[in-house]
Structures are given as C-alpha cells and as structure tokens.
Image 1 (tube, one colour):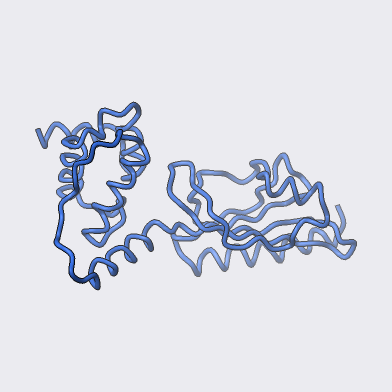
Image 2 (cartoon, rainbow, N blue to C red):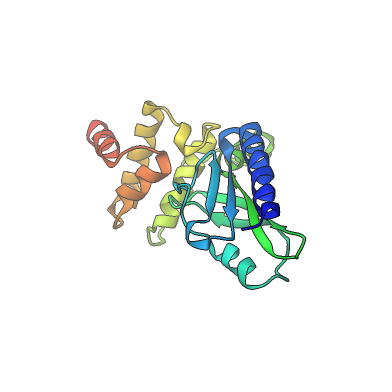
Length: 210
C-alpha cells in the first residue's frame, strides 16, 4: 500500500461525498478500493443498493483488477437495484502512476422518478388519443407486468410508485388485484418493494379495498 495510492483514495473519497451530497437522494455514489477486492467499498453516499462499507467489489471492479487495459470510463450503462428499480450507471477507474487501477468511482442514478416525470409530460403533450383506464389484456400476468402497471399508474398521478399516498396506493392495489396481477407468485412481496412499503401494508390495503 503506497502513499500515492492512499492519497488517491482520500482525494477520490472527497469527490464521492461531495458529488453524492450535490445530487441528493436520486444518485448513489460508491468509491471502491480495488486494492482490497474482498472489502472494496470504502465510501457510499445516498445508499440505494443496500450495500455497506467493507463489502466486496462488483464484477466490473474485478474486471479492472484483472485487466489494466480495461476502459477507464464505462458510462451510462443500464442496471437494476436489488428491489428492481432501474438505474443508469457510470464507473470511473482511477490509476496510480504505475498504470495500476487502485480505485473506482461509481454513480448509480435512480431513473424511476425521472421516468415518471417524463411519462407525465408525454401524457400532457399527447394529442388525438382517447383517455383509457388500465386495460385488461389476455396476456399472462407476470412480475414485470405488475411493475409496468404500477409505474404507469404512478405516472398518471405524476409520481413514482414510492411517492404514492395511501389513497392512491389503495386504488393501485385494487386495480392490480382486479386484473389478476396479485395472483402471481411473490407478487405482494414484489409490489411492496416497488412501493417502498412492507408486505403488511400491502395486505392492509387489500383488506381495506375489499
């Protein structure tokens, strides 16, 4: 562990904290110490992924450790958080004067709220279409379909699913149940993650709406 490497890590940590606090809760910023891949996470701001300091490097981090020629910047690639929310990610490798990767600064932008705003704007400017409720279809109900239906409902209210109030959440639960989505295996657990509430809250909403 050289003094140069440690200086690079300290400076990168300052950047991680500053960027994270500037971008607020929408963007997770993670600093990985690639010298210790088993305990790589050195700092994490706006924790969206549920990881902790001291957890191991990701696959991308391991690829950088193994290949000094791995791209220094991998930008705007898609990913998903453990609860299924989509993110847009950028990873910046940091090399020392010997050309060895010692750190990676990673940004994971939660695009869900922004997608909801974009969907709301799209609905606002759309022309020559009849307003339609959530439509019943003949396709098999899937967890992906459940997520899409919840995001569409939230977008109609100019919110992300996690921003829905209790009344709106109850309306959504009733709509999803009537369309058969809540008969899918693990659907209640998945819906709870999408809404950012407990399973008990979803079951309570179901009882109140019946």
